[in-house]
Amino acid sequence: MSLSAQVDRFVHDRLPRVEQLPMFRYDLPELQLPDQLNLVEELLDKAAAKGFGGKPMLRSREQTLTYAEAAIEVNRIAQVLVEDFGLVPGNRVLLRGGNSIAMALSWLAAVKAGMIAVATMPLLRAKELGEIIDKSRPVLALCDGKLIAELEAAQREYPSLLTIVAFNLPDDPASLSSRAAVKSGVFAACPTSADDVALLAFTSGTTGKPKAPVTTHRDVLAMCETWPRHILKPRSEDIVVGSPPLAFTFGLGGLLVYPMWAGSSVYFHDAPHTPEGVVKLINEIGATICYTAPTFYRQMAPFAKQQGVPTLRICVSAGEALPDATRQLWKDATGIEMLDGIGGTEVFHIYISAASDEVRRGAIGKAVPGFTAKVVDDKGSEVPRGTVGKLAIIGPVGCRYLDDARQTDYVKNGWNYPGDAFLQDDDGYFFYQARADDMIVTAGYNVGGPEVEDALLKHPAVAECGVVGKADAERGTIVKAYCVLKLGEVGDATLVKALQDHVKATIAPYKYPREIEFVTVLPRTETGKLQRFRLRQTP
Image (tube, rainbow, N blue to C red):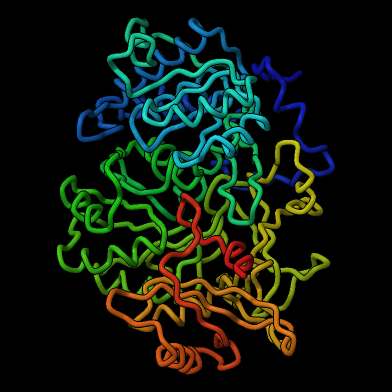
């Protein structure tokens, strides 16, 4: 008999067919989770029993909430959802906001009440929000008051979204905080099945049309027992900061779920994130763990070197490939060996990584405990070590897209295919080459764009770069680089030649970019990922 408490079966009825699902493995003792659990009950309601009740959980310049205080606020919002709006388990709740205490509490409340959280990036416009509404059919939205205009525009086009409630508007009697303030703060967690859906996390769109991976309560708690337990190793005294949005699973894990699992606290900084500002913030609050993308670490490095970051002990890089040039720049500036990782929205978070004392230059790391990873050919057969192929993974979490034909592209014979090209060495370390569709085949040679980018970034004139293939009548495809230069550098023919020579001297000469175009900005997602597909579309 199913233990499911989710009454609204919209998402369950649109999951992939059984034969399209990945295999799941729960090989570690800590992955043996009960069949009935609610992730918020496990991480928040039980915090007091773990000794975390009086410890700070959520911080900002204006407010600090302990775990016990946050639990009451979450209960009040859950009461609003159920008592004021009549929501039932399985209803989708759209969330729209930047990283703030109110956004975090709203997400936790929706999931605790058995609803399915659909968090959206703050910079999305009405058209993009409309696509998410059309796909997920939320019945209610909780939206930061500063961002409500675009959501209201989307609602006019997609009236299936019935109600919008604003947060971070304390003086509005209809706001979420005003409604929650009169509630008792007593709310029992919905008795969800471990396999009930907790969230839909729409992908950030590095390859075009976003998809909607489905994540269960079991998935989230299982991931807490993999990378955080074995690689990150957070402590209850940690103070966590970072830039990835809570609507991005990199941010949701790093800046909410994993700190809760460890009893740590998170500081949400709502001012614009500038490299110098983040370094100052780290020192002001004594942050010990930082999450951001490689490009931002590169921009932060000179300020970190100048000001120092004495309290910082762990720096996590994910979201896109970490060039070794950036890793070494950061290490020179701070003395900290960056913790790299690759993961995906489809499996919630990181599945290949290495602790700082096990880093191998150029490698991302090994399969995180709980996961098995291999490099395969087009038929799914494992290739010899040192050979480039496609990454395939299996573990306690796997891809389940909501009503999407691309499910069979990601899951094949039970294995997850994230779409990345890797090679693995004899010691089990994985070396990222490129997205599988970003591998450049030029005159019969395979060239990984990130490898060329790393070489270019080692040149003192280059601030950022992106490398893609460009069609060519003679060679089929050539390597083309788009470079953002540092202030004061002049992008002329002399510099083109200098950069080409530099690449030839750094990696195999056939990999050098035959064309270099200087640009002022590179196309990136809101989470900082380079959108190479947009570079390929450039005339």
